[in-house]
Structure formats: structure tokens, C-alpha cells
Picture 1 (cartoon, helix red, strand yellow):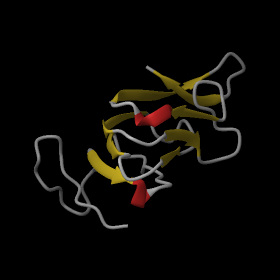
Picture 2 (tube, helix red, strand yellow; picture 1 turned 90 degrees about the vertical axis):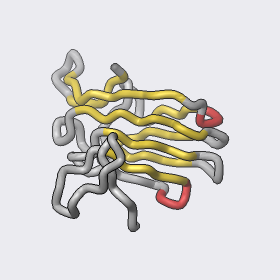
Picture 3 (cartoon, one colour; picture 1 turned 120 degrees about the vertical axis):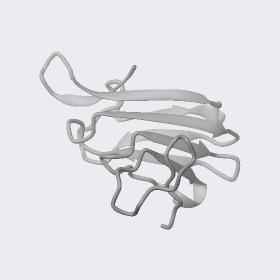
Picture 4 (cartoon, one colour; picture 1 turned 180 degrees about the vertical axis):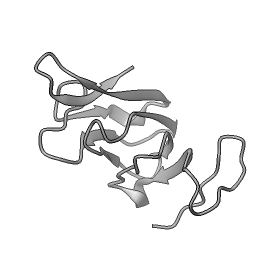
Length: 117
């Protein structure tokens, strides 16, 4: 998939630079952010969007901003056993606009997963 990658201030980043901002739609779904993606803007007005987080511990923090809602936005783990808030997935019904941040954390058993912060 081809995207224009911009920093939050709107400047286009060099191809090998760390991606700070990525904008996706249903056409990009399912989308798996690179470990360097820190901010993902979502437009779900054209259809449902799925975001598959990488194995926790390989990423750090992701912030997902549902800029334009309309359809469901689902967060899930890319690998078997990767959890989102302790479950296999989390769905924002109707793609309710707002910001959702996730951090890689260990649960009480030491297993890594993604938690809302």
C-alpha cells in the first residue's frame, strides 16, 4: 500500500525516516503498523477498519485517532496470544471518533499484551 507519511506538523518524511504519522482507511484494512508508527489516523466512513498490533514488546506505544467514524474499528493482535486489554480484540462500534492509546505491558503472569492508557 502506498501512503504519504507526514510528521504531525505536516512535513513529508524521507522514505527511511521514522514514521510518526500514518493515515489509513478501509482500503488499507487490515493494517499492521510498523514498530515505528506512533500515531495512526483512521477514517472508517467507507467501511470497517481492522488494525493488527504487532507482538507486544516490539512496539512501545501506539495512538490511534479515529478522525472520521461511521463503521467499526477493531484492534487485535497480529500473533496468536497477543491481547488487547486482556481480550483477543477490541471493537469501537461505529468507529466513534476519538483518540485511543495503547502501551505494551506485562500482565500478572508476565505475558505481554496491549493495554489502553
